[in-house]
Length: 290
Image 1 (cartoon, helix red, strand yellow):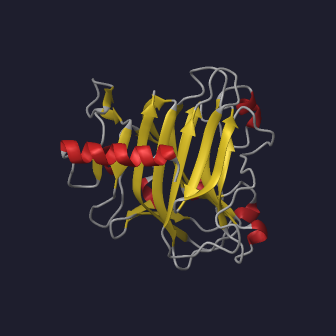
Image 2: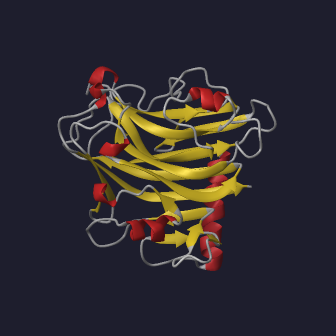
Image 3: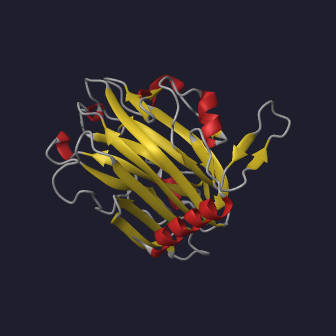
């Protein structure tokens, strides 16, 4: 594990041990939230650090559940959700590619130049890998460029870092996680993976829990000295210390967390003729620097 991750783990544990911050329910507060929209009926919290465990009764995970768990959230589609044995299950619709076939939402977090994010994920025992898709939480940097809009990232509007599961040519014997990044120095039209994969050979296993972690640090000025790191089960999949997220201070900070769970891509060959289920748990994020 990286020194940053070790520092983060030690920092989190010292807070819990020193302050006794152990909460019942589905989440822990590891930092005092910033409350916005004071005139609203329900205050919307912006958390710089948070643990979410989904420990509640089986049933739909409503918008109010999501707000309680994550804070200020937008785009939540409760219809694709279900709490199953204290995990969050997302349904991927059959014969649909893109966000309308799954989930795409955003959690507002306290702006920061350095963040760590971690969650666990598993695919249902009968899951059809198809071609691949977006899977889980990731960082919105600046305006949070996605959607094969490399020109916006190259123009300095910001970027993003997420994970995909991917199966070249829809080959079930070769299925892996890969990073998916937008940044100002990118050279491809869609998100870059830098050729990084987990596992390096063979395929992911259905029904197995995987822990995915991301670390991001902003570049300074116009330098290519920012960091992007992805780990799976503690193994470093990607570590790049030459990332230029953006040139302006306002566009190179983490502003939010994307939750992307859908098949695609946008072309029909990303789709599947069957309904799919992906399960998530143990979401954690920590702002390490403003």
